[in-house]
Length: 410
Image (cartoon, one colour):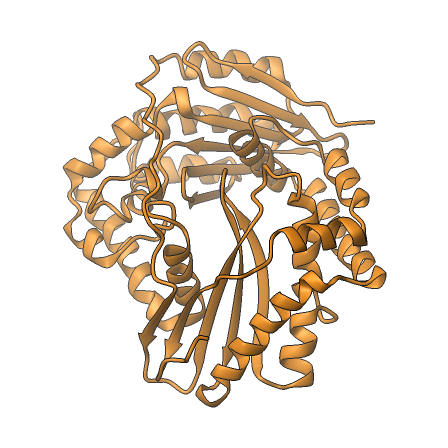
């Protein structure tokens, strides 16, 4: 039996989506607001990171302290995140607190106070996070990798850039909120225990505001450099490399995910076995798939020593290239088990499911049921994965290194 999907569109264009989860007493929701890193103008990289904190420093009739107390009083597990296209605001809670939580979030989204004296606190937090990347080179190398791999502005870091954050003003940031929090381009998703008719009635009242003008499609620019080195006087080298892959809209989507799991799905995966266990080249190695609407890539991280950096990159690229020669039935089965285990865990988390529903609707224009995803994974085979890999050979890599010296790429 397939999961039920609830859907309603408000008069102003906001899309409401829901999936009931029998047997749970919790509910989670997620707003996708069209205010992501790629939607911001020149010199505003990081504005969304400031906004995700600033809007919670007072909204409606509540000042900062009163709003925090109200949110905490409902026992909300809150989350915010800045992605390429969206600023996501979500919360999970006991189901009986849903209506009260939605009232508070309507204030945050439609009536944030945006007080000037609170702005600097939010901006300094964002600046602190960027500066803190110097102590987190593994995170830093992957942020720089995505920035170089995807064409501008799609690779812009949600965390922001220091030079832009330092120049950001309260006035221009408030203008971003006014234009970026557009109901017509907002997706709201919830999962768990709820009454969808009641939610729709409440949302019609809470978000009874005119739709703003839809933004023009973002025109992609050029990708960054194929190789970037960030000097760092340390005893380690942090390596990030990324290569193009079929996007989520492709028929090969499930096959490429199986392939990535074969490459880096656990301690029996090829990267772990060949790079770390057999050769002892690095202390950490792993790859993951990421997708936007029309473009996607497989990224890989490795941490090693300066003496082993060159060989580490060469062996990793060799394992990527060896994939298209084919995978074994055992590798296929292990990959499916791992991916389906992740799917089961998602099915038990209302927060994860609400996030997945919203993401699916934005990327695909529809929501895949968990049953559909499982069936599509089960349908993959050694032949289908091998065919996908042969049609999408990894022949170009974007590479970023952080360490005391550069490597040579051939």
